[in-house]
Image 1: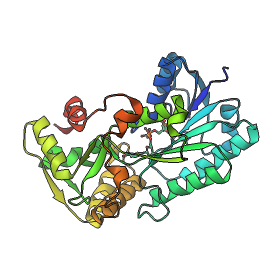
Image 2 (image 1 turned 180 degrees about the vertical axis):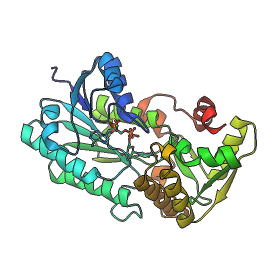
Image 3 (image 1 turned 135 degrees about the horizontal axis):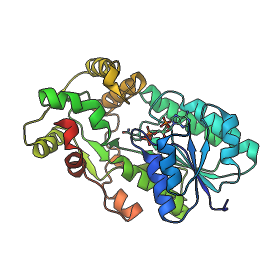
Image 4 (image 1 turned 45 degrees about the horizontal axis):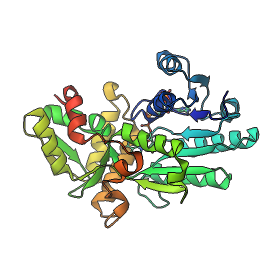
Length: 309
Ligand SMILES: NC(=O)c1ccc[n+]([C@@H]2O[C@H](COP(=O)([O-])OP(=O)(O)OC[C@H]3O[C@@H](n4cnc5c(N)ncnc54)[C@H](OP(=O)(O)O)[C@@H]3O)[C@@H](O)[C@H]2O)c1
């Protein structure tokens, strides 16, 4: 193993798939990757075929993380939008401390990661980051201050398909939009260029577009060639709708915890809790930090049009 090796968690990817993208991009740049997967399957074989060393482990079991962490120079730490993040962070920190190696750890995080956020997963993410720092780890925490495009299939595909409506509780307020692969690009930049992130342990990274849901509905209308409108509903009504979707056999990645989280995020935005917060509105951050062109919502929807048709 090279002394440059980066441990990449979430390397199989599911929802945003950031870990899979980080692993692929580092390998393309000739950086050795140790990919943490939960089991050997077709997805782990894909990462191995790219040249990664594959290790099986679980963030819920620190014993499996000790050999994964051993000897790596850096790590990319991600966890799904789901319960269990505090335990995962504690397990990872314990494994790092047991090995005696001290990898610089780039942590995928979210804007709602605050002590007082209405989302239980936002508060849990914040607490997980506190745990990593109490443990004395060398962390660079990247709070993606944006909604991933990849949420739209989970949250709105059904209502767009059947009713021509995007319904949620974000109200009339704009939000930042970021493609999950571009979120991963921020993380690649942090792993490749630590000096760009050296000034603070926590960074807020917004997307290239800042739009309200009427504007988002207009992009849907243009891409689908039929009218799609936005309908604002209460937090309670949207959470109930999402919990109903999450209970369906075809719910896929939408889970109850994610449903409550996203409804709480919408509520926070609608209540103006982020008002005046420039960390969400810096639409040039992606190009400035990564030097790459971002994927815009129109392009993402065009590529995935069949999901909404
Ligand atoms: N969605 C948004 O709008 C948004 C916005 C801002 C920030 N974020 C951040 O994005 C992060 C999610 O990243 P993502 O979209 O890349 O996640 P993802 O695609 O859902 O992938 C999660 C990965 O973690 C793995 N995993 C799950 N449980 C694990 C465990 N116990 N031990 C080891 N690995 C485990 C999964 O493996 P399996 O395939 O085996 O399940 C999968 O590879 C969240 O932390 C959130 O803070 C999201």
